[in-house]
Length: 109
Length: 115
Image (cartoon, rainbow over all chains, first blue to last red):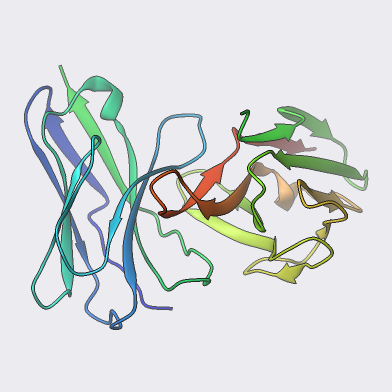
């Protein structure tokens, strides 16, 4: 399985943008980049995913480097409810997801 | 549409006891998964199923068994619980969401304490 590398933790101030990085230098051409997050005492939830182009949805934006060896999850205005562990996962269709330790995001009021 | 539900939410077992965790999904998904999550760690895959009547081993299958007799249910069994199985167990199903994106949906988790 292709691996991802994320910082263990990050801090942000409320209502400011947050950029969560993910390195995946061994990504294959057919690997999708998925982001999930896990709020305290809950199961993970889907945030966003993409293949090559940048993606936007109501929760976040995903910026993918041109060589696809890294990506960044962007929360445009962090709220206290965005405090969670964020997982960056590479996945090919039909393959199992592999969850690493993720990045613990703290949002300061 | 309840999504993915898990029963029970919390359980305490003594070493050597057995129990079954139940996962149910109402989204007609083919794929279902059981994960465990230890404190400060990511999720590790125990077993999974790609359809009714099928099961397969994940990363950490030892000490667990599973069954998928009905498409909507995925059962995780512990035949003889050990303290090392103290963990939070998450069930998930996988399918296409309303935007045709392949997505995993997770249940709320079962906290298991083995004494």
